[in-house]
Length: 286
Ligand SMILES: Cc1ncc(COP(=O)(O)O)c(C=O)c1O
View: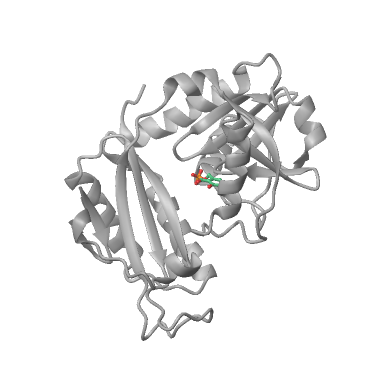
């Protein structure tokens, strides 16, 4: 399998990452994940913009322009023959010797970029049936808007959910729902769709952005407003969104059914609108 290493496409086995890489030492890095359908990227511009924005927030400079990166990524999915799958890209602050918390001089220490591909088919059964979630306190830091490789808080939350038999963790801060461990979270009440506004407490999800766009275009009422665990209990429908899951119904929370305990018509409509948007760019996927 080929990968991107800095600004070249190479065999995976050729990549050498130094043990003093600050990504390895401090999780001093950022990443992004973009999805392709039928060999064509969906929302590549948005993902590349978010990668550059995360980099800027931690004063990292990418070793190429957005255009150059998009060309490299397109070449990568071609050579790896990715039909429906994900591209994971990561940028770290490079090799810092001796180990020191302070940022090294970027003139002396170049960042390290890698990108890999994985074939990931759409999970239509799961999207029809939905998944279960467990409520877990949001113990993460206060810059969740940065897509940082430092994911321990997210990993611990998901592990907590898995131990209790859930697929995903719904996170809350003092009773206010923020997002899930690896997705944004939404609820529908009386035909109005709610999700936490962007800001420092959640990742500005690209799927969230697209769902807001298609919902508004279709005249569905949406409110980017925080909601509480109490509101969640009373919700008609709950769902999560991410690049890989698209709009995924959450049908059980802490073992209790949401509504009827099956996918509701609100999220089903959003799933269709999302797929319409994908098909406009990438061709038929259903
Ligand atoms: C914490 C978190 N929130 C939200 C998302 C959804 O973002 P996107 O829709 O851009 O994949 C992700 C995706 O990985 C995530 O890790």
